[in-house]
Image (cartoon, rainbow, N blue to C red; front, top):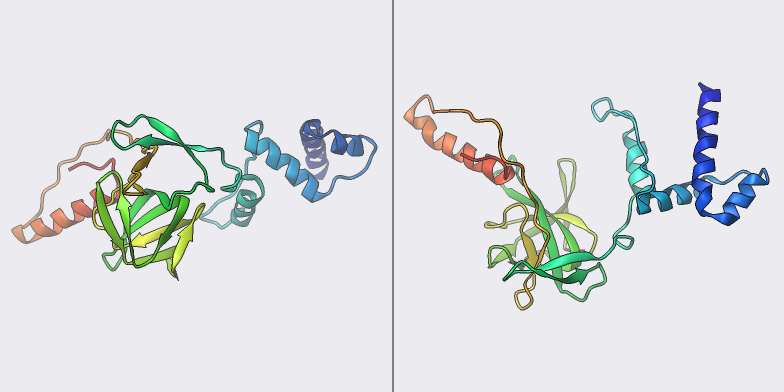
Length: 237
């Protein structure tokens, strides 16, 4: 399939060089573009949404996993590339303004996922949009109107936890010790409580009746359902 691959590669290059006059001239004069130059052109087109790189592979078979991880680095926007993000008033939910990773806020982060690990620890996955978050400190949950203590901060590498002291704008990490936070909550400043755009969840489409076999199982079932509800906001019981 070498000839077919060469043909499509040439078509790809002819499309992406349109945006760069200097590289277009170089290519049309018969010079080879470097890998770095091609990747930079692809990155520019990806950032503007003109083209969408597609990767083939299988996580189950570990095929193409490194390629797509490298693609994330090569083509997707870093926090510095992201356009300004809208924030909303916590009082009336009206748009209040915009922020980016250089904003002067002490902390602005979004909890986007909750998990319970094998040791029954509640893990709150969050992304920092501005400022920073420190381990062994307090953070203000704007949605709940409560201060919560962050006992530990970790970066997750599959099931392995790497302890960190602090995380900053653009970082994704996990907070351990947050009791009241649910998926979609914003962490921010108490004196200037701004909300990030909330996450909308689909309504459940399947219903199921379930009951414990014995009275002894009743409490276990209740605990299990509670854990499911914490981890999946679309789950109702």
